Length: 357
Image 1 (cartoon, one colour):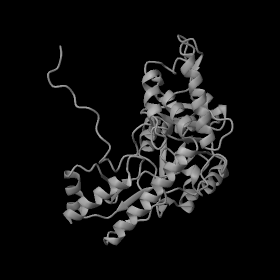
Image 2 (spheres, rainbow, N blue to C red; image 1 turned 135 degrees about the horizontal axis):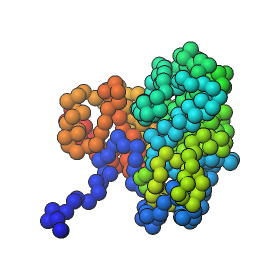
Image 3 (cartoon, rainbow, N blue to C red; image 1 turned 90 degrees about the vertical axis):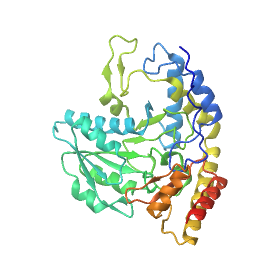
Image 4 (tube, rainbow, N blue to C red; image 1 turned 135 degrees about the vertical axis):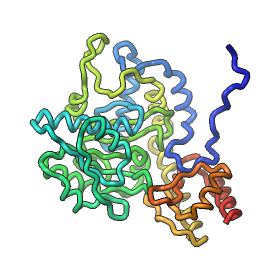
């Protein structure tokens, strides 16, 4: 039966200021549609998309500083973070540790709380200093039963980058694995001065999402591992498929994310992503300056996220005016300078802000 009131078209991005997703690159959109019905979860039946997934992982490895990357294209950062905890738990249990814990900064994404609940793992959240993991607190929290230490390379609220090399050292001191959540920051950090990648520290696994700053189509997350042991710790037998085992968390996966990742990386790595980073950084610094000129307290951007302390009434007025904005946990307005957040968009936003002050 045909509906009289058809669903509206997709939402425009022209007033979306707080999302870490953006419009896919045209090539990524095209290839996502072409491979929509393929299933990389059944590699023997879908060899073309399986080969594309290997290419996608090679691209992600190049971006994250890993010469021989292992991994797969996940549904997003949540799945990749769950898998990092799952691999660490499984490997710790193989070594005889039954009651394992995971240590992460309080700035870690909420997916780690989901993961700990699903996997029945103790999650020890430690304080931060200026939004970054407090090394002394991490060192005090780890022990012989710590299976995983987590660092964040581009926090969701403020875009802060944890001291990755130092955290890796703490993890190694107690025999724990080390995971870096670079879900959003991973496509920006290669063009910064930060130490964050596999080439900078002894990192075991990483989350890096093409469907964020990588401009692939949703869903396209990335789970990377330094060695095959990590994937083997995740694998289960698949006796009724042509392939012998499966390491991914989900079974059937659309090839759209895989194909769009390859298409976006082909089109943008490295020069296009460098231009994206430089433009976003310039816009974030400009916006922070504009807020300061208006007497608004701002958290200075490290990566291109701007957090500004606006009165509650003004924040709600801007939302009522159609601006898609969110708050940090402390209540600040949060603007993520994604590719669709142009200088023109920011100027219109400030015009609305000024008119309602």
